[in-house]
Length: 300
Image (cartoon, rainbow, N blue to C red; front, side, top):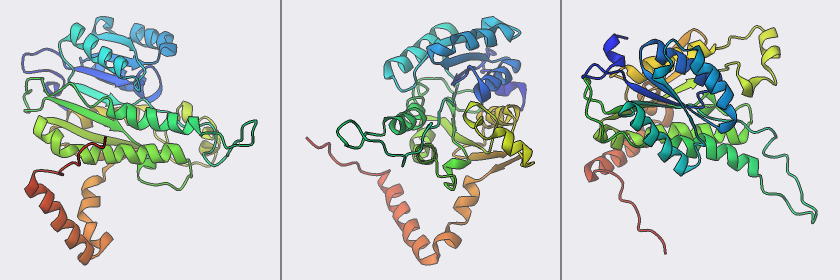
């Protein structure tokens, strides 16, 4: 990465928003961008204020840092986040959609109310809202940016997980939401390219954070490889600033970082078979020739 990766053509530092930036992977990502000279914005819940303030105090130049209390599911909060960031630093150049959570009880652990009726799994919907809807809420507000030296108007990194590709652990809501994040990245590419905004994914393997405390020690005792928050933060920073990264997904597994979307595409024929792959390719070309999918009319 060159120093130009972190500055605008006018020489000013780029500005980075990290959701869930007060702790774990998010906090280390804030530190990494700040060390490269960027302005950094910690977007996190009000209950994270003390952690965010402590993080800002630990940085070498607190004038290049801002904490904004944000619930990423709340649209008004997100509008305020981008508005206040622009007010302080001028524009938003990089957004890391990192905030997320995992359910505390199994989706199939059904509960009944006093009348013996099944309770709605409200926690499951909260996981979907935060991890998927919250990520969708971050992809806006960059098309008005002037292009930088790489002709890009901005960069978004969506934090998925290996759970966005595999489902063997059975953590239903978390896995469903992270598959959705991968789908969001894939579905965004056409319009993102038209707008000049790069949208990529970082998909970490096991990383000791607050959502893995229930089994971190047993994992370590087994001698299994694990990421550090530094591993993941470094992958996020390099992915967000590399102009060649468009529609890529970087899987981070300890010391190994591999781009996996290109390989998935290359193996489509082997995966589906030549006959179905040919049908899918013709369908894809049809929509390309149409300029995209024609959406149905809204139902009254």
